[in-house]
Image 1 (cartoon, one colour):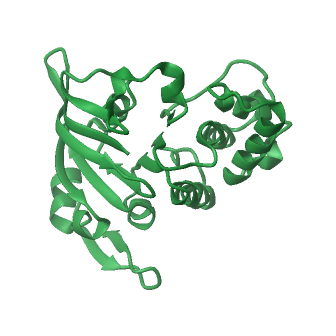
Image 2 (cartoon, rainbow, N blue to C red):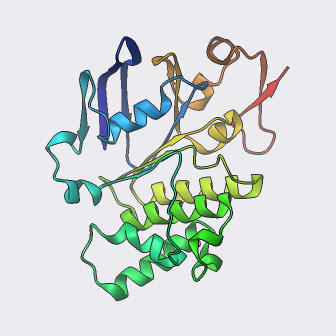
Length: 255
């Protein structure tokens, strides 16, 4: 489990994050929503240790994140940033295998894990392709496979963080990727996903946090968070909230 307590980040005169607290629990997908500039990526960078908070603390398995040695932390915590790219013509399978660098499981075991992670990200057919030949959406799925391979197969105590993993994907792959994240979390890991699509968040997340101007507005299950008033306050959007006729989760319709 990963816990953030009273996280505040100041950048010059700007408060990029103010008093955010959350828990990423095993077997749950935690979604973060908010408009551009709300502090979503700053929150992820703080939770992953890339940014040191001005105030507050991040705990991984009850231990301060700053106390973890790099390799040990990389075996428990994997991050997919908003933009990932490489400038060399690596084979896709070799890119995904980079996720295994913190481990010493051997080439044969790693090859099995790489194949499984590629399949989970719906990218197994790309394994022998050059990374530089891929489209933006294909590259995004390859990098998802890389962070899945880093933690594969997922277990209690591990945390997967994804910054807008669906941003370059077509609708079918948006759903297949988030289904893969849910399946990964079901093995015991905790997952945090930054999303812009309210209906994807409603369908695939167990808990949600709404951010605006670096401040937490409301947090809780989708039924509690995805209500007309908080969505209007955060996004300035007038919406109708109904129930999905088959799945039962909130269905957000812009008026």
